[in-house]
Length: 178
Image (cartoon, rainbow, N blue to C red; front, top):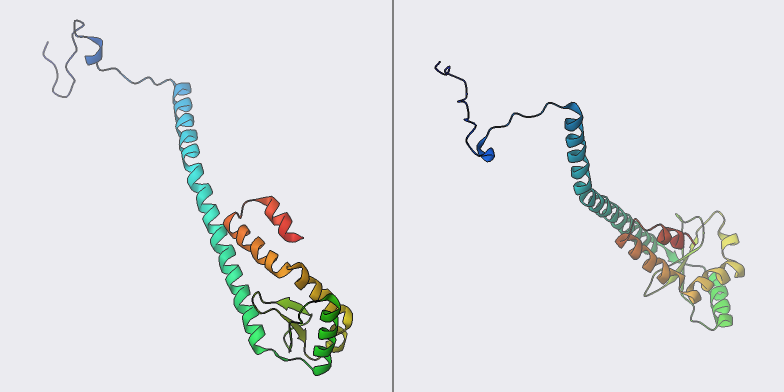
């Protein structure tokens, strides 16, 4: 009998096993194991890439956030006016008690609470109008100058930079919250 025109030629039994064409097994349990094994291998292979992508995204986001905050504080500092002479005098008196140089004291109408800003040239920004008198007391200056003495503004900058480099480290987030 002659082979039909589309059929594969029969392999004689005398040929070695490596040349034999084997038919795939249609055992469904073997197929699921193979696919599951293949998908878990792909998943594990993609895991470091996905982790690196999330890391870079978080670092980029935190970098942009820090840049916006820096530019905003710089803008607030530039829009600020020199503080009233009695506020500057109070700040200098408290700084002399602490044995430090008094930073510049400025006021801004967009500020609701006193804060210390600046690394090279620290300055205390006070609100202008509204609750201005309550924010220019000896206690407020003592509080802000205590931040300056402890160098909290520098530590905050360091913590922010480290959080940008290691955004997935929860201990840094707890440290930064203090």
